[in-house]
Amino acid sequence: MKILIANLGSTSLKWRLFDFAGGRETVLHKGGLERVTDHGAAIEECLATLKEQGAIAADADISAVGFKTVLAKGLSGCVRLDEVAVASMEAMNAVAPAHNPAYVSGVRQFARRMPGTPLVGLFETAFYQWAPEAAMRYAVPQKWHEAGIRRWGFHGASHKYIAERSAELLGREDVAERARQLYVDGGSSPVREPALRVISCHLGGSSSITGIRDGVAIGNSLGLSPQSGLPHNNRVGDLDAMAVPFAMRSLGLSLEDCERQLCKESGLFGVSGVSNDIRDVQAAAGQGNAAAQLALDVFVHEARRWIGAYLVELNGLDALVFTAGIGENRAELREAICRDLEHLGLRLDPDRNAGTRAVEAVISSDDSPVKVMVIPTNEELVVAREVKRLLDRGQPTLND
Ligand code: AMP
Image (tube, rainbow, N blue to C red; front, side):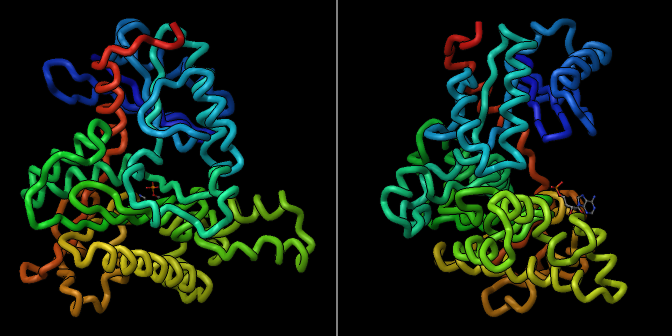
């Protein structure tokens, strides 16, 4: 069974083609296109490339196309993306303007181009379906809550991968199996004592931190929208709700100005005034740029704040995991985030940390009660596995 996972950005299409033949999970092809102006043309190019490279002989070799969809009104989990589902995604475009519109238009293009092929979305919110209600509720009037103004949490595919892989690496196959079965049984598979407590730090262009107990998420730093929690590349993180009306009145901004500035001109870029890429911000800070240093300091401060929150909720910690572009590659930031936490049982080994880049590794010292780990994430694999599971259940294709 060949499953194509399509990662749709507003100006990009990246893909991975998985083959599950013989019980294996093989990546047959990995590619991408940047500066895309028309997703339809990009899909055409993707399919042509897969044929040229011998990964497929015909479009029909692809059993399904899977998407790491962001959020939809009244919908989560792993679902068939028929027009009703796509319209539910569209209804939330304003909450995720950097992400949802690309999926809405891209999925519609796939439906036109591959009308007989099942299209399946694993929503980024899916991993938080079993988080405690108190962790997901904003203290807003009930009507707001019913309108969907609540914490949803995102980066679900990445944090679920970390839940599974960290448990495997820590020798807790029971917890790994619970994480694997999560979308089947909602985290009710038995695990043995003691609880496995993990904090997963997905630090990249978008960043979020999740507490995970026995393979099940207890919350996520991202709330209603992907513009919350830690500061992102060019998107704001947590912000007092009264900031928007105050900015509108005192700076004379329109609602659209506020939306644009919070979604495109904030985060690391907004504070540093230098770049939305942390490499550039670090380079500028190294040359004495105080605003760039402040952007890094804010990022580290917010990361520690969320780690602290989950440390308390989990009543201690077994492993702190770093993943994604910054988490896997930026040793200086990992060190800054882990600074002075020895009293909590967390001791980083400076040499292991400095020597680790984009590979699985333990970077704490041997005597550290809390293991600090780097685990490269694999979101596409998580999506592909769930798409396969959905197909194996034999549901009819919606766009046949
Ligand atoms: P992501 O969204 O996970 O691709 O992460 C993007 C962020 O991670 C950017 O701020 C990059 O500076 C940083 N990053 C990604 N890859 C690397 C790398 N190979 N080396 C250093 N930093 C990286």
